[in-house]
Length: 370
Image (tube, rainbow, N blue to C red):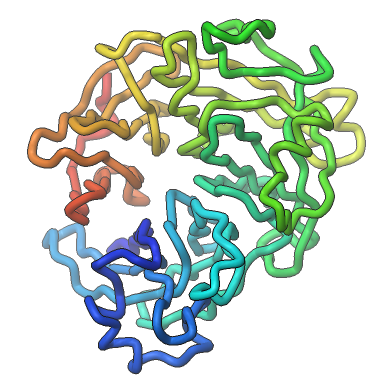
């Protein structure tokens, strides 16, 4: 059986949410169980639900609310220690009807026992317009994307791997080839363009004031020499490398996929002598192949499976050599695919259609992708 944790990208004013159309169910929870109670009149509607799915029967056996009171939970990623990091794609603060600042990650245990988990923000991972995370199982280091047109890539070095609540150090990605670098490759930019399939050495820089009350983390990071990206979206750890999508990058703005290979001494002394490397893996600039690459995951055979963010989106496959092919197309709803991930045995692909709130289970054989 499979435990699936689903994000709900809802705003405080969303008409559908966990508390009912008129918050008539809000009395069933305590204020402490909801991150932002909204003074009891406008509770934040975002969060996660958890379901237990029986692969043999194709039936959902159980589903429950597992995190409440957040805003626009978008993407995130699994941890090697049995939990899901869900990310707020929002930096709301200072509104009279909202009680707390937003723009944080939250950890949700993967549990088959229903529980509304304590909503503890992982504040030292940074406050910004989060999208996705992935964890290197070898080191426990967490990598993060940011959904902004001038976004950065972040790395979180935990004080205690596997215990993110204990804090750590946030860093931003730069390239040693230049003091600063713009990877977006937009045709109107006069900066040096990033070459396809070229390996660039990476340097990671500390950044302070990670609570960022002015929502300027990316701007201060760029001023320090961090590389700039075009809407960092989905991110996933492969075998020994990390893939992430930039939805609006590329000469024509149709999207890019990057590959980061960590250093053998990632996050440790000696990393600068043999740093990690970044590669622009694909940038097809051809909407017939791929456009608006968003969430992504990695199949057991190393192929990428990518969800497009379009009115009529596709699920797109990319082989380890960069060959692009199409798996499926959404013709039923004008809404993006999201949240692609595989069952632990690699035989079933789960994917959401965001607008109508549907989750699909698609059986393989995924090992024969070509």
